[in-house]
Image 1: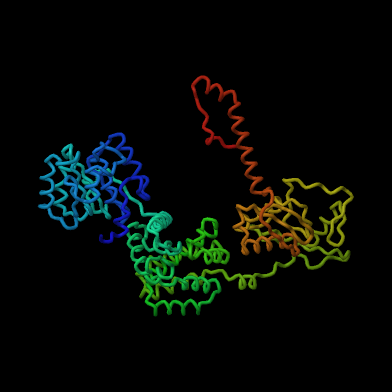
Image 2 (image 1 turned 180 degrees about the vertical axis):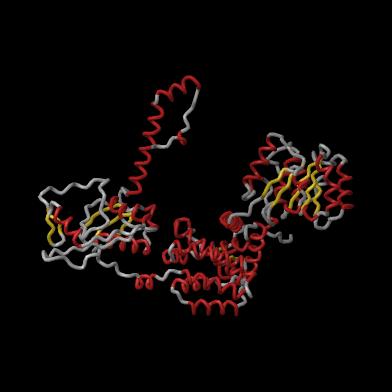
Length: 567
């Protein structure tokens, strides 16, 4: 017996075995079960997503000898003949080969005759957009008012080329591209039943190369089995696909982060020597940046068997989120404009240089920042030394004269000695709402972490600070705990920014120590609980309001909880 390729052998024969396209299956199943059948269906989608397969299953559902059903038996004469492609009342037409009006007229002339063996005469017209304008016009009348025993199933990869007069006469279903995980899972199931050894990473490569087409994935798997001698291995699949080692993408990112323009240009020249498409390279770079962004935000979503897992997680720690988004945008714009460049090499390198120009250089930035001068360099004869560093704020702070500050010191009730304030009054106990001043000399931390977070001038590191729980602290260190669900925030970049902000706030070096776990009593959780309590109080107030109760009792009014907002 001749070998049957996987794409044909494992072609779904029922809606239950169909992978993906659940939205289409659900609609057709309900229509068949409720006997609400339309006379014309249009399936659209890219190659290999199941247009013709669904059309044949629908034909079996309409002609199964058990009756019109969403679950054809698969064993009756009609079902088996349709599966073999020789059912007399199933007419499959390739519109790409029969574009002329004469072929369409011959087809429609036969439509008026009753079916020979089945319940319906089913016409499957593949690539219907290839028909000529006159052929479309010839089928309009029949398509709108066909005989009761005729069903039309049209399929196309380019619905924009189908006249709107035809579209309006059909129920249209858009078949989506297959998800990579769905393709990989289906391939694993097939190879397991075929008793063929495989490596999961090899299947990931095949599903990626298939670009959403299950048929392409099965064809590539057939090729991989032949290439690897009844095994599907990563190295052999890479060689078979001619997949270029994409390590050059990682080298480009490393050069960008290192601000190494020379390495960038040399890498681009090496790519040119290897005849790598620069348009495809920008596309691959954008795809890589997207994967890094996902790994940075939701690291647990990166599959354990993904070939690039470790590299992605490593890059997620190296690249700042704002820089990552900037690179992604530049890659997209560079690909869009590469056709306008003098040549592809110039367009590609210009995109890299644009990324380089906007890459933040933390060392140079730190060196170029001027030190904040003290507004008071010395005091008068009482030898009282006052240091008041100016915090960077959105609005400039008024510089007071020495005389004005001395007057305030003289009027203040506590005595100031050696930059320490001493009073006879007992120290107040900090509460959750205690505010912490943003400008002071050698401020002592009072243990109120939430108030400290509110007082700090933070950017992206605020998310890390909000999800930290204070564990312990002393004069020179603060121990914090981060919940397991937010551990992705504990990146080196965020830790450094938070440490810098706290050190500037207290005007002394403060060491931060992070751990994973704790009770989760973080500022973020406290804020969430307070909002929830405020919302609950607002809803209770509305429900207990006499006027609202009167509306409910007298007019049958109902309260919409989502419309209630606390004041």
